[in-house]
Length: 139
Length: 141
Image (tube, rainbow over all chains, first blue to last red):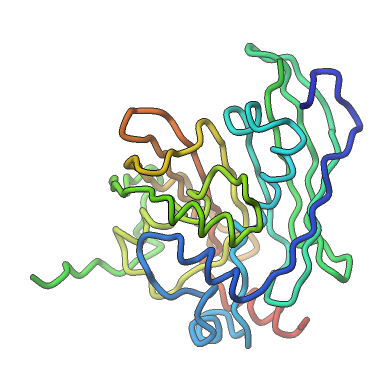
């Protein structure tokens, strides 16, 4: 589990292989049961003009949350964590996404120390698909 | 009884601060298991990420025939949802703006469970001209 002493440390690097089956399963967790640009190739073609559906950016949020949870510990991250990601490139079936990050800074806050982590997601070509920050408050 | 037809989403008419109402659903173990399998994380605690609370709130208010592409997501995690308990979500339009001639819509949602525990807050930045980035992506692929 992370402590307030952390700085310039890296969070666990995770690698995820994206398949359409997993994209569809992620979309099936919704409560509206609607087709979208993630699970319907025709809708992706109509709305995006792409020949493929794209994975929801929220999948990358989940990947980043996993890495941060493993770094801070579930008791910390699941109650004080945040993930902010800006999406730069599409993620699609066949991509391999690597998620990682480095502790950027620490700030003293009311309930402890806010640890700020710079996050990245990149594909198999080394292109960044998302960047952002994650945080948690450690005691 | 036929389902009520929703008004079509008109970006120009959306109001910053507009409430998107609230809805409830039962979070099931099946949803949690499915989410964990989809992201290959057996300890994932927030299947609500995939429920997309903010986008669902918008979709319950408007028929969006244009769609959008998520430009960014912001999430706060407060307490993991518990399977078997109901989740209540409240949504609103946080902001809208134009950048590089593209319209952006920022929607947000707050989720609590049936016991009043705050679960999470999420905010999504949707770019409402999805074909513009799609053309670029298609050319790159």
